[in-house]
Length: 285
Picture 1: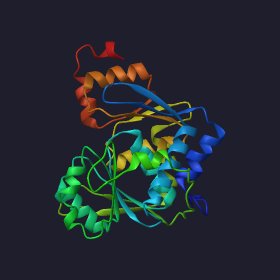
Picture 2: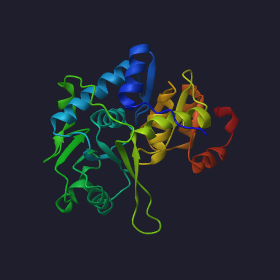
Picture 3: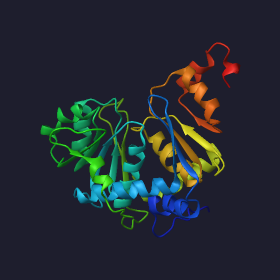
Picture 4: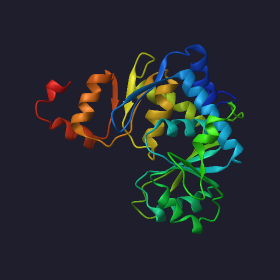
């Protein structure tokens, strides 16, 4: 009978990202394209160090192992660094889509008993609209600017001493991911740190991701698919990943695929359909 060979202790940030940073410090781990189509590249060492500084900043805000933390961020490097930082702390991440409105966020905050939220300045207003009714929220950290009654995270990160994090067991909780709620209230699906280890198998056998690949999964940050194929899976296989901040435009997507020389692509069916309808599609590849 097949059994998972899960380590006695496992932490994705420490046992995957930090190991890549040690073994291949100068190799690209992330290619980021911002909304203006400006490209930047981060090495695995830079990703490791940035996430350790984020971990120190969030720890200094009072977050600790077991705390539920809502993450409401767009597709920017700060989302990745925040997710890795909370992994280092052993906190339980509640990823949320930017499309959620105040009532949706309130449900998730109260249901998960979230203690803190990390949001972007662009969507903090939705949080402010519900924060008075959130029973357990105590800490509010903002990226991408400043906002009244929020703690600006970037200045804290800049001056932080890197923090590798705390040990986590495979059975420790890592995420609470909410379903879409099509049959009533959304359900909070819990995932432990063994799940973060297992995602390497999914990426290896479904994506066929390798260390030589450039993997682009276009899923939004609030969806489980972004955990599988942006954050956890490809990096577990040593792949470089793509993160694109801007909204989906079929023509631009095809141009970027060609320019970046992406080797593994994971998209929603709707995106494939819209791309297939483009005139002279073959000339874009």
